[in-house]
Length: 101
Image 1 (cartoon, rainbow, N blue to C red):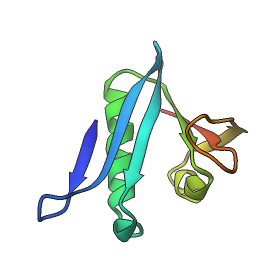
Image 2: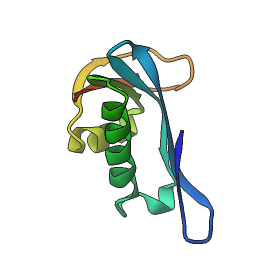
Image 3: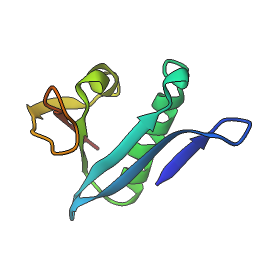
Image 4: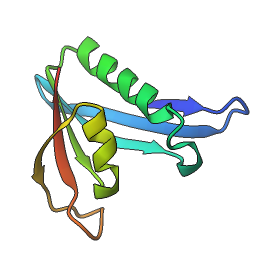
């Protein structure tokens, strides 16, 4: 898990990454506190996520994203591959993305 903190020490963003298999990772959580969306926090955190994934020897990354975050992941270079049912995200189906590293 990686966190981003504001200068006052409050956590404003975080992610958790886990293995999907021997060559792929899976994003378990990726969150940016809404007041900090659009300030580059998510981009920097996602770049750290990709670097961490690469350094772990993974060649791809899977993300099951809330539909509201679709444009962010697409800007980050993730490719939409499917819509997936979710037990934890109600409403519209989450979108599955993949990033090849």
